[in-house]
Length: 307
Image 1 (cartoon, rainbow, N blue to C red):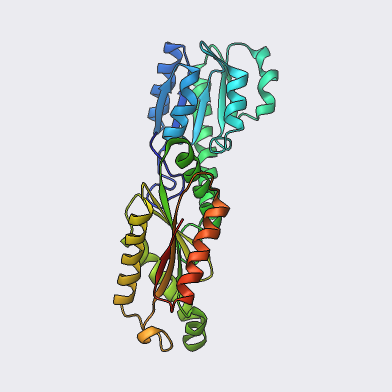
Image 2: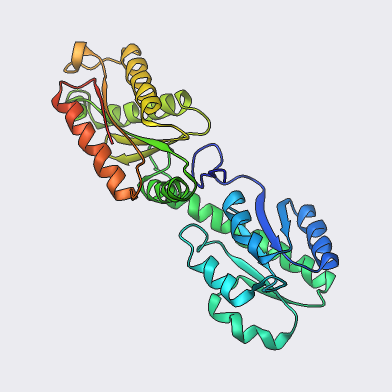
């Protein structure tokens, strides 16, 4: 199972929305596929209930269109599984029902919309236009809520969600990852010397610099004040340490002036840890913070690590 980050900066809020379509009626499925593609939806079709969860975990769709009466799985149980899933629970669902009278059974799942067979082509086109508007509005609101206003990086709310996803994939599928907690050394002194406007400018400069220095598959977040967190997927601890050392070195080599910094330049300290079985986002952040503290106590401009 491939780890598909929800929030990292290279994939966040793509222009086309992803849909998983679960429908065993081929003619209805092909009609939906055609119209969805015309509206710029990237759609994956499955016709068995036991493929829905795994496909959604692979694609992390913006929308699930589901016929709850599939040949191999009871729809009510499938919906309960989706709505209770740690990753999939917030994805909106549109139901395709065989009969109008079935609506009452599924309303408490709060579907975005309900279609009843036979599907009317004109009605479907109008509904899809409405879905596009709803999804775009949701993306806009989510982007605003998940973005740090100063640096443009993802924020601590996005970090918590991303770590939840990363832990799930690591626990269930063995997808290891490393977490780096990065802190600007003597940042309070920097603000006192140069003023908060220049302090903000430094945060913005380093955010852009680090974002460009990481791999496209990695994610970096503004955490608290002058602290940032990076998640490096498919990265065991030793490789995470190497990446942290590189960030520390290239930041030092930029020679950004700091009158009370080490050697009169801006430096960073980094705590590094990697996932181990049973970890939660809180445990990982606490452990990374403890190694960051060790780096600070070791004289700063240092990387400390462990599991």
